[in-house]
Image (cartoon, rainbow, N blue to C red):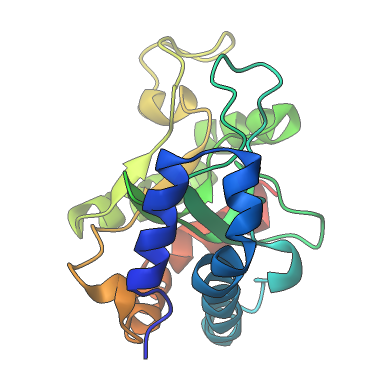
Length: 225
């Protein structure tokens, strides 16, 4: 028995066609059974398993599933609901936020899927720490080595919307210039094998990749949290 099933896909397709409050409220029970509960179950399982090899992880499934409601305050698209489900296991006891440091971030939808870990965007304080650590030989070489090993194994490791130039105060030709320009650091997992989203072994697959990328997550937690 898996976490998601055909009912999950049917609900998301329906929501995409009828992205309005009246439709959602009429199908709220379907959302609970086919989307929300499976995601809670998956995050709970990941939280337990990850803690075995990375005790720093302090996820709480009760507050690790993102709301289905979109933030439409500054968006031209006023559709009230997301057509995907997302959750994470945070590396902090504080309330998790999208972009924060996580041991696992999973995003499942009808248009795209993404699973990985790390910090999508550093906050201002974290960014300053990151740059100093990257510039220093000992810590900079350590994280550069971790990144190189993960990339060699096929993980997509890097930042998002990074700066085009090395920040002021650092040499433009710094040996770790690429890292100095990053605004965050994540490791994206390979594409989920076809059909696995509906199988119980999805948890095993996530744990395997979570274990493989744990050195990067732990480094971030210890140095940049």
